[in-house]
Image (cartoon, rainbow, N blue to C red):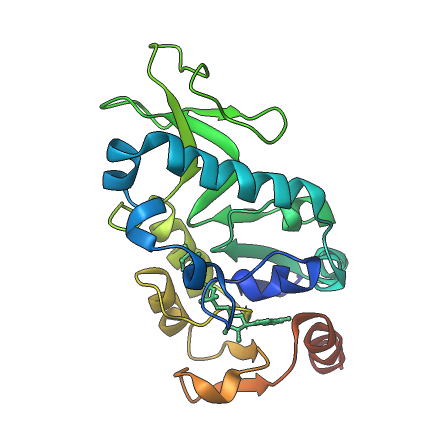
Length: 230
Ligand code: APR
């Protein structure tokens, strides 16, 4: 029976693909105010600015490639039953070959209706740009499938169940600053082996049972594989 290996990833895993993180120096939130581009209120008051913000990020994602950390996670599906729970809205895990990816904060390659009471129906976005003319089947403007600050995290319970059954949990490339997502790291079962991969791991709070791998994602994944395959 393959052991259950769960990755909980954040923006840091995509840093080596050239996609900026949020809270590192020169991170995204140093250049934009969250309330201007990542809240439902921002969408309602300045729709074109918000849509353009995500169009620019989608363009960067399309022009980026998965790095060796994404690829190593995908290859581990040969040895383990792997689930990836990501806070990232890029699709680099999928493009690296991971089969079981759960996006807690949405997927920038998909759009959904901005209308009221619209069921969770997603529309693939062809290319990088979502325009004012892109409408849902009910005629409402399409918005990025991104969970904005203040919105519910629909996949949270599914993510919790996955972590509660993990044999190995690996937290990689997240500052664990954003809840409720960050609270997931406390749900690993007692017999679960837990690791954290992050160059700044000494700077943040993580449960004491986690083994720290102070490294960027690509090197940290190579170190992790040595440990879990031994
Ligand atoms: N390899 C691994 N980790 C890295 C690398 C790297 N090359 N470079 C930076 N990091 C680490 C940083 O040390 C930091 O701990 O990645 C983490 C990035 O943290 P954040 O920028 O806060 O990103 P994240 O934790 O994913 O943010 C969570 O906040 O803004 C919201 O919805 C957004 O999903 C996002 C959430």
